[in-house]
Length: 398
Image (cartoon, rainbow, N blue to C red; front, top):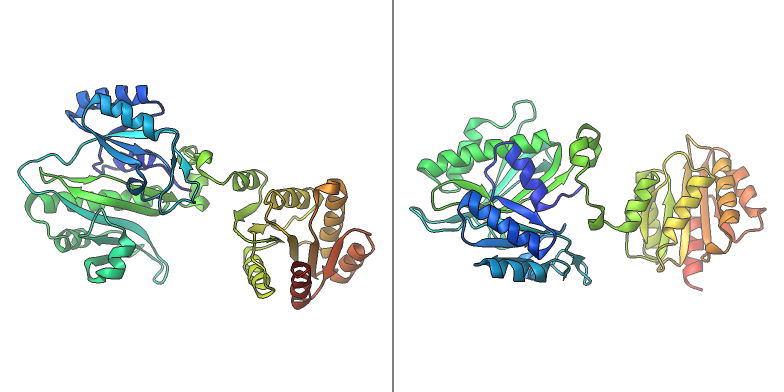
């Protein structure tokens, strides 16, 4: 589950991470009021107006701008709120901006030179341990840094039973070329950041940039946080931060009825029980010359109501030319699934306007095939994997 920048910064601040302070506004008038309040609290004269959307590269799309006066705050926030922001991480249509973060200017001059760094905390899947990735090249796309100057990216692997050790935080500060007060501030920053990552059960923290300000303090200027959805039951307060306006509407609808659905760009809809079989089914569709239109795991209770909901969600995608149902009857009997498909088809009537291929394997698979074949409906049955692939191919080649 992704969070907005301002939500992520609230989490960081609660663990003692120094952040670029700001206030959220949904109108230009609120933005001006936020800027005035921020000036009183922080003394900042300039303000950064940041679009709040779940996408990186906002600055490249015109979603992050500097305002040097209250008039500019009003003008710029008015331009950003309501715009469809296109970034390297959005579709060509972009994402609608509903709110902005009015943030303090932390780049003011002082005793020391300002430096920008990159830092992220994530799981190193190869080692099964958390890892802090960091670089002196802050403010840039880390993918570009990895490609062009990989020697400037450092990693620190953290043992799960020991946690982040003091020597590791010091090594990070040393590799970033810091000394004196900035060195000590960075060790505190890293320690607090890692505690926030573990405490919030996150899957990813990305702070780009982290800056050494002119007074040698270390500040998180931007932040991207992805929470582990499997741990949200332990964090009801964080789950309440979900902004469904930023998510695919069909995926939101599927989640509401207990279906695991991911929207894709292909032409063959999939309905499968089990994530592993779903991945194999997507490979099957590719092999048959099609492209999967979705990932949909109906789980172990594929009754008529659940199948009908799955069909309706798949058919919301007008690119779908066929639907492949691939069920392995282990816990659930194939004949019950087949009856569910037949009942759902009858209930939906003309709403189903594409061919359906059903491959059932496992308990009572033969009975299930007979149920479908004798139903009189436009549903093709198969038992073998290759047989289902051939039928998908035949439908697409018509």
